[in-house]
Length: 102
Image (cartoon, rainbow, N blue to C red; front, side, top):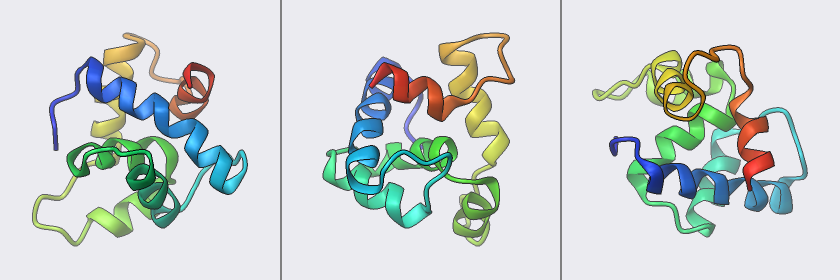
């Protein structure tokens, strides 16, 4: 997983319009929808884990990453993003924030 920096944040905010264009505005998207939109938007493969944590449900995220040796923690990835963009605001909806930024 790529370290979270401004470039990653910018890439993630560019994904929101692509998701809406492809799938309509939804509270959550499937791992497949996010992956396809991320690839179409030109996101690097090592950034897509952040997109999955933002736009997918925890059960979908866990099903996708749980069986991998480099297992990622849904709450941990979301906390990294939240702390980077809105320190101290653990209750925010990350997808909604990025939709507004995008």
